[in-house]
Length: 331
Image (cartoon, rainbow, N blue to C red; front, side, top):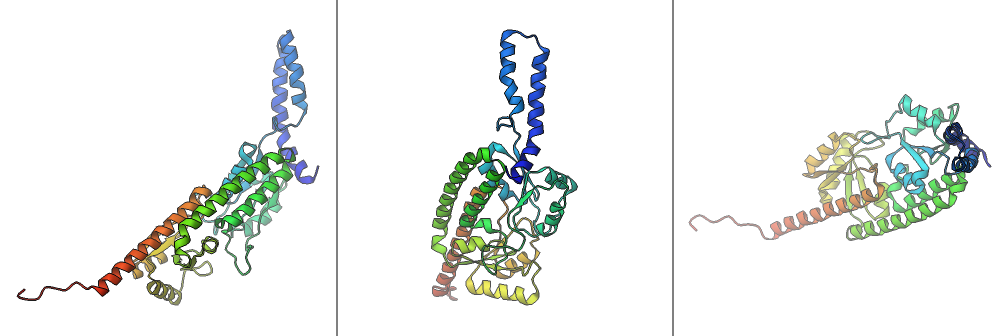
């Protein structure tokens, strides 16, 4: 048994053993009739054996909601998941609460996501007296060179790699349930492959198209489906006048009529761009809890906006080719 397994088992045994012994003592206090004695004898081994039936769920803390969805799909009822960054909060600026730090110390495993706030968090987790096992990418890491966008899960291929990594971590902590984790991971990857195919089919007519975003969170999604994101924000900061003017000029030249924003960020600069190019604000969330549903929502929403842009462009061309004539005087 390795150190990871020992640590996890040490955390999980007290509750299970205490519960089993309590039940056993209640039986001892009852009359020793035949069937009760048989029941106690059958219960005895459960009081001593650290089996999966007795053990509490593996306690896992994750940084963001999409990770929790992946862990729950693979671990099912064998895991208990806590999320640090809840709905509406940004992992760029989040600060864990004292209660969350206490939960981290009780966790068996902390899965990092490579998001900015973890840069200050990871040293604090390492310093905890009973620190959990830590796994996952460090802030600033990416599977692509020269790319520090942490939203890798928006690419279904990288999401499958994330599933494999989570499954491997769970197997290391609870090897007795390795087969369950493997089977659940395989089933999840089949679903992800289907979502990838469906999203690809939805966006296939629009390969090469660009869309404007305030915060550059959709780079991996765009690369996976042959799209191009044009970011208003630069280097994590509000855009300067020159960059803002460039974005507006490019949007006008390309006929872009949508500006994508996230619920975690201010819309001020995005609204400036939208007003300048007569575009609509579209809210999309890369941190939505239901990854499977959200990926298809992203694909359908962008496809709808591309179709709307095409319609607007065709209407404008028709108006130019066949201008409406004003009736002449005396007609």
